[in-house]
Length: 329
Image 1 (cartoon, one colour):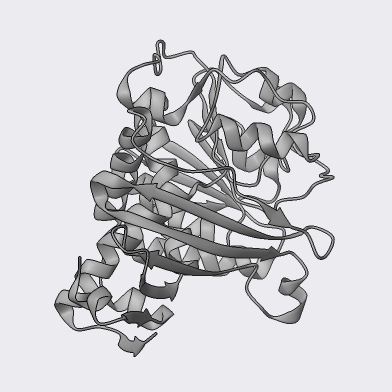
Image 2: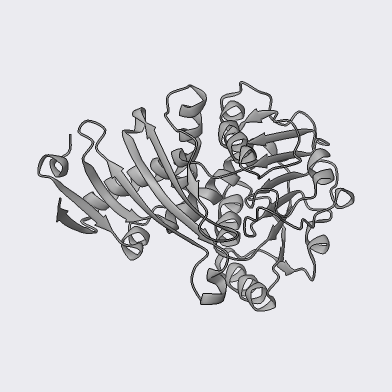
């Protein structure tokens, strides 16, 4: 039990506090991979995330999880509002609460948006580590927002072999900003694409990071997808036509139970049968990539074990560094 829980205090970490802790993308990838390893061994508790939908193409969801080995227990309350873009507000916002697993008392309240962005990129990198070709040199990023940035950073951390990134966004302004910013940050060759096909065709790894839509108008066609590709949609099936998804030799997900739950409420109307959970791949319970020609997709929904694994590491580091503000319950 921590001193904080004994004195009924909790640590508040603002967005600026969270960022100033200084967790590296490599550390976040390691935390996320460990979370999936624990999940594969049956050592986590993570119920399907219930949600409400107050507006079209909007959601507010509760994401609880418990990882005993990491002593990480808590919940993330996250919203995604497509209409926020027109208001000059972020698409995703989130708050995360960590609890003491011994007493249930809150240990910390922190911004969850930064964690969401970083752990999502990390999960893509973990999936690509096992499912993409190790010689992958080209990456397509569709959607040049927060996730487009974090996913490029994380995939590049794992694939130093990357030689070219093709980026596409419906906003030319966003696209140009992304190309300039990420080129300066990572020193990669990043080429703006004028349409999704130009971005996708011939790429080794494809990441789609648009908004999640219940009734999407998908773009990516089967004819654009070459042999050996690894694809990771972060936007459910919003970007991918059903024939493109059904062309995959292996269709994986970060959590089958969550995917089936979403299908029960109207998402994922025409997807392939699930080959494996990412946790099964990480543990070697199911075969990962078995040939250079396999086309593989990991439909990453974003799961709460990722958030808690990163949050507990961030909390402990913040305490050591004296970052954040303590409040009485």
